[in-house]
Amino acid sequence: IRNCDWSSDVCSSDLQVASLLPSAVNLYQSSLSHLRESVSAAPVEAAKLRIQSAQESAIAAKLLQVADENDRRLIDMVA
Image (tube, rainbow, N blue to C red; front, side):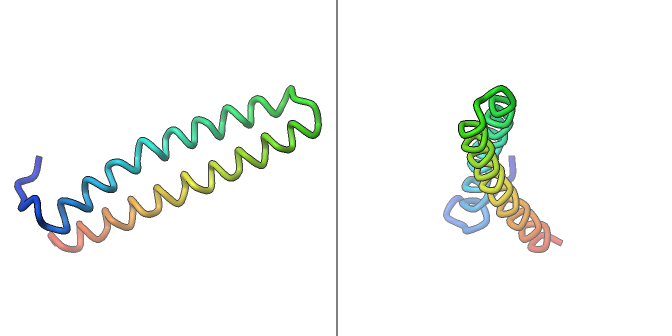
């Protein structure tokens, strides 16, 4: 654990980003589950499940992008 001033922007952003990662993982898992369900679903239901899967994947990817950008910013600050 890093020593830091808990009122600083760096530490608060670390905590915010850390909370994004489990959400991204859960969304990806849900996306995969919906995609698997779509294989055996009726055509209309399968289409809905694939759309839901794509939306969840897109949101998870955005969360990971935000986390990555924050990590790069932190590395630049200490380099």
